Length: 286
Image (tube, rainbow, N blue to C red; front, side, top):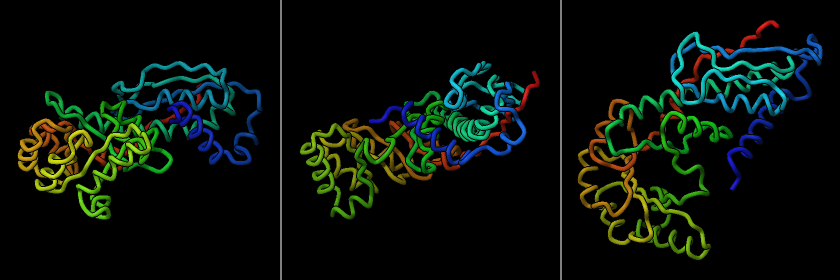
């Protein structure tokens, strides 16, 4: 499996190529190539900072010998008027990396801040917060990293690192039992250490998984179950499987789900409903 650093290197390379193309003509036209500069990242909105380490990697990707001074770290609470970091480098480097660094930090800080709001609601409960695959194409790496920074737990990263039998898999396969049997047989034949999660839509589905899933399934998803129905499902499951509540859970309702004792709640809105934060990179005259 490709490491985080390798994936980030690819993301940065592709993003800079997309932005710079044949050349940063705005900078090339008016700034000497050897001119040194300094810039500071200014915080313009209260929240949770995320993406600072990524920003440093972006600048070092273009110019490894930069001077990067961090005043805060990822996961810190940030307030209007504070500084996140200061970078000293060639002006060409600063101007070429500026937008990518800001885009990443603004997006990641918005996700981390929303995630922190959710995890604060879960304090005192057994339940943990999961993200989903409802992410921006080619930016999942950093969106999920922002969830982690905000205090959430990453669910599967993609289709390759876990088996999740959702409603469409089950319907196409002809039911929960054949879907589980086929998935488990596949992992054995391929010698794949993949965990299997099964989505259930009602208590009958839960009973089916409990009846034949032991040793094959590790987690049961309770999809669009109201809290009172989750309580009933947990009694049937009786601790034999991990449990995950999913579907329509938001900041106003998450505590009612946590109060059931379910192991996890997954919230797609952590990523697709988060708003980018207001940050700016400003030149410092030296």
